[in-house]
Amino acid sequence: MKNVLILILLIVYSCKTKEKIQESQADTGKKSVMLYKGACYGTCSSYKFSLKNDCSFIYIGEAYVKKLGKHSGKLTEEETAFIFKKLNKLDWNKYPEEYPIDNYDFPQFTLEYNSDKMSKKIQGNSNAAKEILEFNAFIDSLLNDLKMEKTE
Image 1 (cartoon, rainbow, N blue to C red):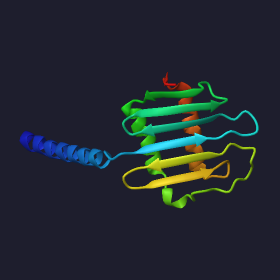
Image 2: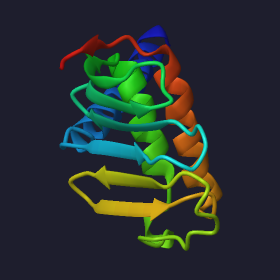
Image 3: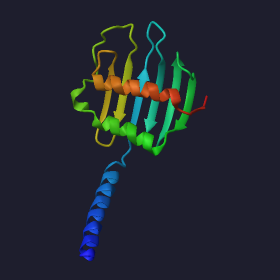
Image 4: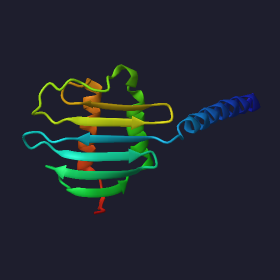
């Protein structure tokens, strides 16, 4: 009986391990995301943030941000995986490439996502889909705590 239980556990464990290997192999392609937040008529933050799936990022602070100029750094593998997992959950086919500008006083944004499976660029401002705006806000909050080095 004990041998049967051990055999069952080994089969279950090997299946789970195989699933994880397949899952990680499917996720090894090159990916990148870029978020550009433009200025507004007030004190809106303006920056460009680019992240690759090798965990490296480039940040260029333009106006009304804590760090001005070009900076670079690395996220942890967990942080990077979390960001790309958020992006993979979005239904990219339902978003137009450009949202109508509802108020020129609000900051404009450009969000680009590239992977082996797709490439999408979305432009807009406060009139964009809720999920896109939430992702933008997530990146805004992430940038407040990132450690980075000035490169120029």
